[in-house]
Image (cartoon, rainbow, N blue to C red; front, side, top):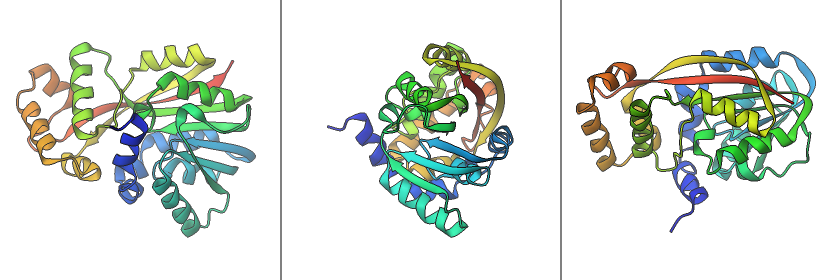
Length: 253
């Protein structure tokens, strides 16, 4: 029987290339805003927590002196290393481990960031506490993920769709849950920017190689969605739908 980390590795070790080339992950207004918020910090050391295909790490590499790309999956890290070399980014290094057990000293980083990762963490608060521990007192923290609408009906639908597609999914927190949890571990939120992200059904399931039985369940749920659900998520005839994302900028207190 798998523990949660093993489930995550089973899902992602063989999908590193798909996440490197994923249009959803490789670009976006949120990624541009992250780069703008970081600015030019040639002496800074930055952390990309749960780096996946490395898109945040690659973007930060041109802004800071050194980037540590951190992920549970060795295959993801191998992909990041190869792509960084291809791009000539010799200031990107990798480190392997879980979000809840970051093997870095206190106050190691000027910038800590995570994007599309926190909803996979087995212990959401513990992962954020690790980011708080390793950021310098005057550092910058950036958190980006798909977020729950915060309405029970819509939340249940979002979490169900996510889990059917990917069994390593834990939970998409709402913006209010993010704020409360960040405050509980010692962060003050300075800014929240929300976005709407269209997920094309075909690439969304292909990227995760979702089993046919789960694809059928997803399509069945879409067909039976209540009008409130259908309208909020803008569910299309092909199963494509739209979710909320948020980029939160915070500082340690």
